Length: 146
Image 1: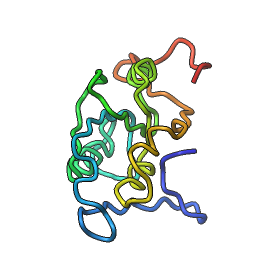
Image 2: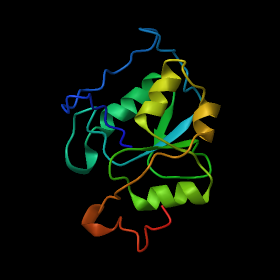
Image 3: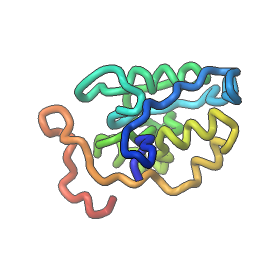
């Protein structure tokens, strides 16, 4: 399933950006957690090309106390997967047993409907396409294992 928020009518709706302490959104719920973003987040809007929605996703995570870094490392707690993620980041996260999560999972944590432990143990978001990346550097030779 996609991370896009799509109503039955087929029209895409813009994701409502949660604000700490408002409408059940829990301030500081992501404190001390490190995230890496991969893919596009069109439901958030803003930016374009390979940066679509990433600035808003970064702001969302930082507003709730998390930290966003550019590459997967041993300090990474979660990799947030958007549309057409990079095969390199997904592969590194999988190799290091770092949970892959999507916007909807994060939104459930922000609103107290799930814990970070809950989303860590859930199945990874289904990835149907990887990004071609910058000049095609994001392609996997064999995506059958995903």
